[in-house]
Length: 382
Image (tube, helix red, strand yellow):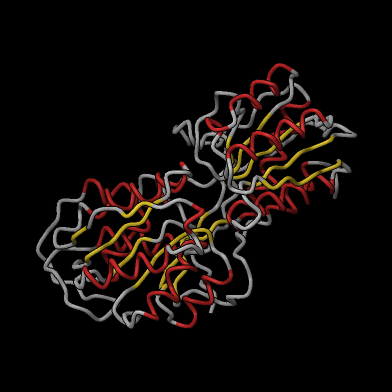
């Protein structure tokens, strides 16, 4: 049943408590039924409880300049096979088409050379604006230089990066908070005794921020142990990544939690872990919110939790910021946000999903704040 209590507010409320709480000696019980530590886990529990509430807040703009007409928008996804890039890109394309713009999707194929080439192609084909999804701007410098020379604004989605170096803004959730939620859930679910294997992909700044933040959070869990991080790249997915992680887990028999870098990687890990016969021993927490991964959670199939993002909201917010740039107006700055990586994100929502609050795993999560209707109203479409 849907919990209709207060909205999530992960500022210096629950999140900040983790860093400053003076830990005391109360006994806690593991949600997963395992052994417990004597540490007071209430600060971690507060983060988890808050992150599982419906997101009803609207932290986006209350007004937007009149959208320009006849805009040719290029949307470049990091790779057509990486849903975490494709979903916000598709949402941005949908938003652009609602405005009557032309929106062309390009596949970066997970290759910086291809990504640089397709951005260049978009520029030479007459694009008025460009949105990147999950692409490291440092890898496409020559294309971004060309865009700047021609006065073409370039925005980014889901990278968790500061504006600059050819990028006007980035739209994505506060990925540092995502990591705090992730580490807090592991601490609570394990009763403060987790042995954790982090995995990470340095290709995505957002992924690095999430995993590093989760590891930092677990340092406040006295009896938790964190193993060395296992790094991979996107091309490893479907090419041995799952088997590699399963082999590590077989060698490291004490590990009972895995931080999945992101959902597509976890989809490779889950069957390999099951094939190794250790699916009942390990729990994975990941992020993005793909329906395949939500099915894992619903079925109790290795993955037990996910930090989910409203990719539709991210795509619409990116188009909203482009409207400002194309009309010569300043970008909208999210109230209360000071981290330069997230200041332009228009309050992008995030949420902790477990079997306890998962309703229909076949549906991607969207926040309960009517974001699409709000944007359409701001743009004069309804």
